[in-house]
Length: 135
Length: 159
Image (cartoon, rainbow over all chains, first blue to last red; front, side, top):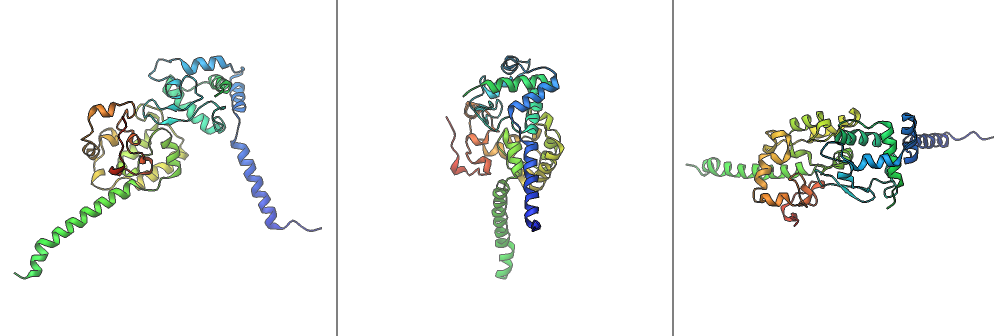
């Protein structure tokens, strides 16, 4: 029996490592919403997510100020005018697939819109509602 | 008087001044065209034009990077691992010429003396157009601003 050539076993190891790394970072919107719902200890409610997204929380901006009331289209930064890619996963497959990026933007934007971070329940509701939207 | 001393006293200083002016201009162009750091384009360019680092002095960039959670009215916070290389890159490529010798008020590029001077022919109403909105919206008129190209021959002021 031939031993596995060292070069091939190294390549296999690197490939396996890359696959694992990928698996650790990539997620689906449904998985992320389920994770937040589990933290909240209650199932997500899309209607609450829509309410949170479209209404004012006593500050200058709503979520919809930049993303639009139905974020299946391109939004526009309320201050700089920079285009914002669609937020709904059905319109933009990259949305809600990178947990670190999702956390970064929830932190910043909830702070801008509500003056505090969003709770896990609110994050679950928002993703649940956005996932119902179709372009 | 020997011709060589006349040359030294009059012509040489004039030539040197010309050379210095030419090289300052070249510096200015180079400052605007530092190849962007991908993380800078990705993080900072997500919300606004990826402003060329040469447009602000190092002291301004340092204050901005230390204060990202309160960034001109919005929370632009980043984790420390992301912030550190961005801050180092901005410090390394910050403006160094006469333009960047003084930090502008509030560390705003648009309040730098040179910015105000370069745009003094733009009427106040023009800035308020929906298509422009703010002097910080470089790319409204300088389409290639994100690539550091502010060539005045390519300016198109939108209606």
